[in-house]
Amino acid sequence: MNGNLDFIEPSQIGIIPAGATKQEALDRIVSLLSHNPDISDLDALRRAVFEREAIQSTGLGNGVAVPHVRIPEVKSLTIALGIAPDGIDYAALDNSPVQVIVLFATPKDAKKSYLSLLAKVMVALRNRNTFAALASCRTVEEVQALL
Image (cartoon, rainbow, N blue to C red; front, side, top):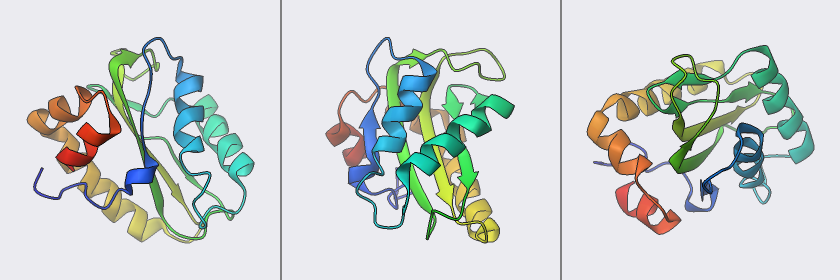
């Protein structure tokens, strides 16, 4: 992938099992950040993610979801990546199953760096070859090899 997504920490990548619900998938992805020292309160992050989803789905369509929150319990921009090779019902804008979920957790004051990184991620995922390669991964090791 030419390093387009190589900034994602390997410990913050997870595979979402077949049959998972949207809530289970989001919970799994948030849990990937449990050992991240930049997250001072994982429960606050989890609540913020679910509150954000209750307002409007972050399923953008074409198999991609980008849940994002800006909260004071996050010290620096943090990303977690979830891959659901079998797809999950996410209530995406186009009603298609979601296979790639990129969670952005950012401090309240990190809007500019968040938008810059979001743009980089979206450019990578708009490439259908990149998306297809990621979406078909069934292990974290396969994802790491692509990044």
